[in-house]
Amino acid sequence: MQRLGGGTRRLAVVGAPIEHSLSPVLQAAAARELGLDWRYERRLVAAGELADFVDVLDAAWLGLSVTAPLKHEARRLAATVDARAELTGAVNTLLLGPQLRGWNTDVGGIVRALTDAGAGSIASGAIVGAGGTARAALLALAELGASTVAVALRTPAKGAGLEALGERLGVRVALQPLGQPLPAVDAAVSTLPAGADLVPDFTHPPDVLLDADYARPEGSRYLPALGAERVIDGREMLLGQAVLQARVFANADVDAALDDEQHVAAAMRAAMVGSGTAGLEES
Image (cartoon, rainbow, N blue to C red; front, side, top):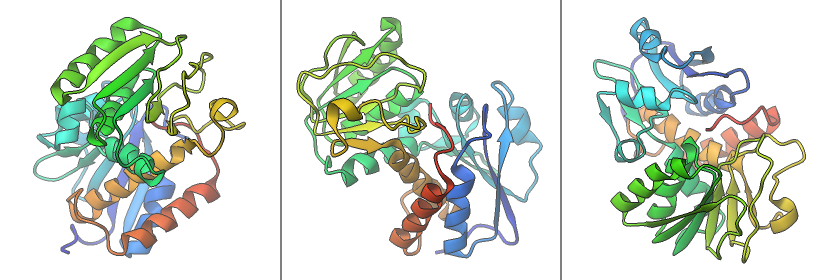
């Protein structure tokens, strides 16, 4: 497949805070395995500053990974976006060039993490929390077949956007207080941040639960209730979305698999695990 550009290409993950992002570790591993000359770094970019940051990048720059709080700004900046970015309103991957192109690979990261854990086809799902990751989680659960999704949240007003997205997807979204037990579902995604102190009970344990917060040194807050066989480490989501980002950066196409992608993904996982848990990047 035709590769983009020649010589050293510059990339970065942008957001605030940014110092604990694992993206440089993941993308550096991908570049090594693919034999690509990438220089990937972290750049602190605060809310409202993304357009100015992009405006001064020169032709050596290939693309950007975008994290909080910039994903909605990235969506507004991109001239074209993929369907997942259009539905979620968030872009986490930008490819630079004559036109700024955007993708949302967070959805694919969730789909991959759940599928690898055996939840490749589901009828019902649940989401804990209503932050930025919740929209990606809803779309991922819909893509896996869910027709109903329960959403446990602290602030009911935050659920309006999820209900509207559910209508577009043909998914019935049922909002409920965070302290109320969740109904029996096939798969769940928790988007609660590290500092959240309330965890819902389960009427019946889901087959799998993806905990997007992988920063807790003691492990997922769901382990006592669900056990290790049901809880998916949030780093699997991070890895899945990073593989899709590498496709965009290497091939300009999120659907074009990397050369020997299974080997590349294994190298990225090894690099991520070897670096330790740096902190929750997704939000």
